[in-house]
Image (cartoon, one colour):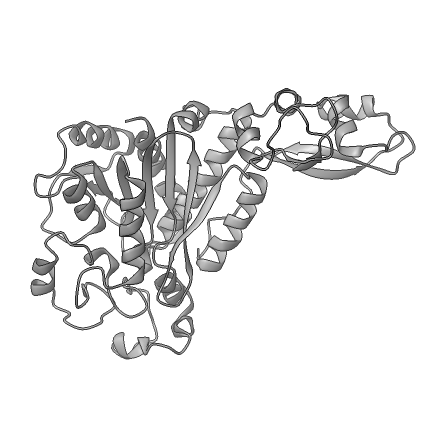
Length: 391
């Protein structure tokens, strides 16, 4: 919600007037250089929207009492309007999700939802960290003020697109919790905002996600995906990027082992590690992001199996065990230290930085998991997502 600043007002006053944390108002208005001179400035109040209602001949005091808001909030939004006006603008505090993630969650859904959330919560930082093979933006979303950065990502694999929906649902609920002061999973999130920074890449593989959900037209005529897919027009089993490279087999953590033993030695719907490590732009973007941000830990969302992997070749730090123990406790998922697998993003991160990295296998069944599982998956995963911020 945008308001026009008045002489004598301050961010502290707006914080009290709308019951929004002062830190969020400041971070939503980086264009304001002087908080003591707000007259005429356009001010963003995060977590609010405006709504027009018929005045019904009521006074501001009567309307304020009816909607449990202050008279001055009405004055701020309505300027010189008063008794006799046909309509009055009131501030609405957003306390429920504004995006729908329980659907076939494609790239268009992601971009639309990020635009809407950024408008309502302008303290969000959204950055394009790279582009896919077909030129789609790969977005990173950041929240928080801390120096320690916890990273989450989804949809490395195309037919695991439900992980993007899970992360976006969590993002929306985090934003509601921050702006309203209501706890999420029993935790007050403002101290997390002040002490940590959260990095989320909701959709690493947008081309692949759109291929699974929309078929060969998603290739834009640039790749013969049906030929790669053995002539089939059904892409539900496709994990790779649009040119048939498995992005989670692209990292220099014993990549040569995966290259030698993987059956596909050419572009394939799944498992083909490419002709060289870090050959794909999506993999490059994620590696460069990790190098730039210096993450404290990474949590990669995949499906399926109701378990998670947390070690790699002994490079993981000893305290990762206690984090894994907490994740297991909060989710009911099985903690697995080692699996016979290499070249994944989590593997490379642990090897490169000797810091905690986790690959979560959400849900149970055959990929892509059905939307009917989403609520259950979210309930199971939420504890891990939150524990990643306090462990």
